[in-house]
Image 1 (cartoon, helix red, strand yellow):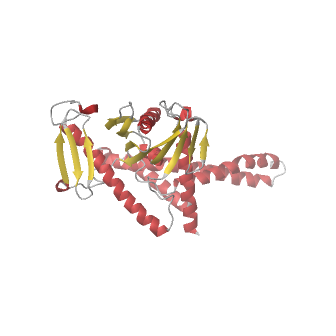
Image 2: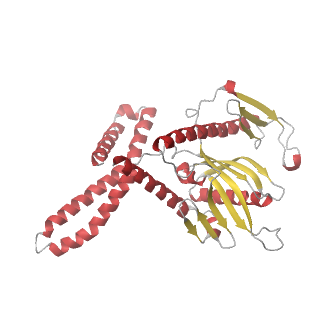
Image 3: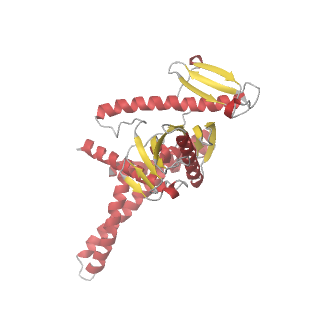
Length: 356
């Protein structure tokens, strides 16, 4: 592990030297490439340097223990430094885990009403607001690509693009079935009803990630329409794109411009096709390793929101919080951090098993 970290530090120093070269500074593309590689290594190298400082401090303190005049002070210093050294080593192990190549990507967020009718559509709107507030806390930009309202003011479906710093790394564990338990406003006898919605978080795919052939697309145009079929405009600006080989259909009618609707629809289509390919690769890898976290299937219930008890339970990690009111305001970070920590722990166990 430490040989690898030393190689990373050497590479970091070399990249820093390259950034000072006039030929690199005058080449925008080369400078972008070198500075990105330098930036990607920075956090790990700084942690490694801190680890080496702590390790040297521990060695020095151990050497002083033999001196009767210094023994007490050295013992105190060891008691302080050794836990820090262990924590730094644990952090480095996590940093050396294989990185998810999608972590830096923007995401396409898709939320749909499942069982529960009107109540499910109301919950779709509430969960979408929850994610909007979470995005605001991270200063991410969120743009609605498509939405379908229900008769009671909820959303049957909403698709949005979230852009910002490392969005997928924070949002990727939200995919799955979210179950809600509460007394609907229309319930006269106070009975708790259970409804469900599905959430999909897709890393936004660039053209380099997914090659979409024009011959594989069928593009239809139609007039945009609002709730109840009332005409929004009389031009054929709405777009429906069908990817013929996979029968994947995407439509967009939010913009008055046909060109903009087509651009938005293509972003969603590329991301959906990328997700299909990712799932295929994941299945192959899982079969090879003979292990898989859950089934990886979105039909799995991942979370329950119980409003009468102000309780949220994430079933994957057995986490229960009695602060649902705050979570619905977008305060999701404690859940996200717990899911990331669990994922890292599983990867460390798998890494240890392979090493053994």
